[in-house]
Length: 199
Length: 199
Image (cartoon, rainbow over all chains, first blue to last red; front, side, top):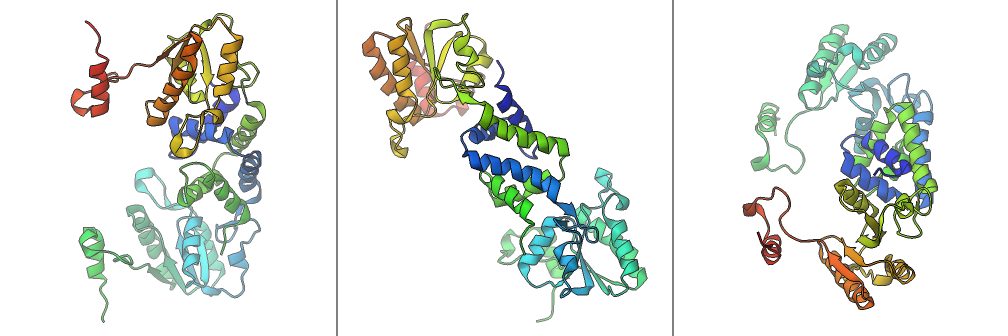
């Protein structure tokens, strides 16, 4: 005996999402069945809307409804600095900090030899084109993740861009706010000691 | 800075699902952005379809596209036995067993004093009406969950139905298939000893 087709199809759709297996998908599908009609309609509408109304900014690669994105259009932002991130979500994290007022560039991934992702597979060519066109850029802040792939990407970008006379910096590594020395892993501790600053 | 509206709305929708917080919802929304157009369209369509095309069977309460459901319509099934479950999903589990050929009744929940759910809040009145109309029913198998609420519901049903001269049985409690005695909890072990059978 099979589930009725509508729910079987919804289970299939939920299973296409990352980290959702058959059990969870079934639970979500039955939950959907009991949801408000309006909530389900809004859900369906917003699914279609992200595909229809959102695009990547042709300059920086950030998700946006209008091209170029609001950040690239914003005349008040400092055009001499570009902060490079792996994903659009990372821009949101930076903006929540309220302390960075330059521009961004989204790579949509990182260089990953283990997954076969090379420099040309992510949004690096667009960054180089941007630097050639905009001679006002003085600094590239590499804010890739503190993972092996993120580090590889950072090193690659530094080698590529520094010869052009543009300053390339990367985020500091060390203790996170409120961190307990006792619970901090060795790599983080090593980097915190290496990067110690004068008091 | 806010997320562009389409993605913010999709994050909100994902957050309405059980067990999905803001972080996971954001991850799912960005994942959706990168999904195949067709998969997203199917997803939206199936969401609307479960609300539009699925109903509860007017006889047994199982989800179905047509009323009555295929099981209630099936003339080959044994109409003298009704197996009572908490949720539609439980019927699927029973059917996977391929050994039960009677009818079902879905309660859509269980009696839960702690959550204020009484007998009239779940699909019990419909079960009683069914028993009054169908004098051919000889046995009610109570297959509620082996939880406190499931037990309460089972006891309530037995008290209600037995006086009408209908046999009320419940599923056996004991070791699950492949269980290791050493790792079995005390309650299960106690029930397995209580319910021991002659060899």
